[in-house]
Image (tube, rainbow, N blue to C red; front, side, top):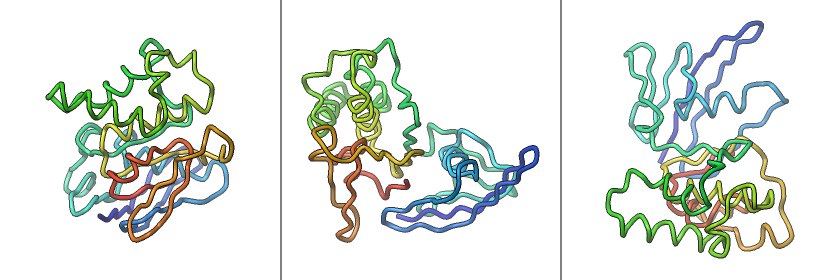
Amino acid sequence: MSLDVKITKRFDGFTLRTEFTAGNTTAAILGASGCGKSMTLRCIAGIVRPDSGRIVLDGRVLFDSEQGIDLPPQQRNVGLLFQNYALFPNMTVEQNILCALKKEKDTAVRKAACAEALRAMRLEELAHRLPSELSGGQQQRAAGSQHGGALADVIHTSHSLHKAGGAESSGHSAQLGDGIKVDRPAVAAAELQQAGFVLF
């Protein structure tokens, strides 16, 4: 699994230029607030269109300005965990996860994947609660379970997920790639094992 990014996006008073290659491992984009970290993730996910450049995921071109290629988000198989968790407020935890699994037409497979995501994030007892009835840490885990269920090739999270320690974060470590250990409270073990790599 590999990701190659070379893009330019112009804004008023600011031009984002990003170029990097990531392999089958955990990668991180570091920089000051407002430098374009989250914008880079949005461009990779297909939510924002770069002005120019090229994005290639494991040999598949997601975006190429010269060739006129710009795959929509639903065809990129890229998961993006937003800073506000992006849970549907009128849906239960279980319904939010099932919504992320809508590409799977087999009802039994969808339910099994949902059950596994709930189990991986210790959310079984909260499956029928609305987001407003969850703590902040529980909302993080529910949002992470959405992407675990969607089985994305790449998982992006546009915040640091820094609430490590305590009951909320225990048990959410996973092995990814060649012995690389990732420990983030909002990223499910099942999610990490299915993703090609994780980009924080």
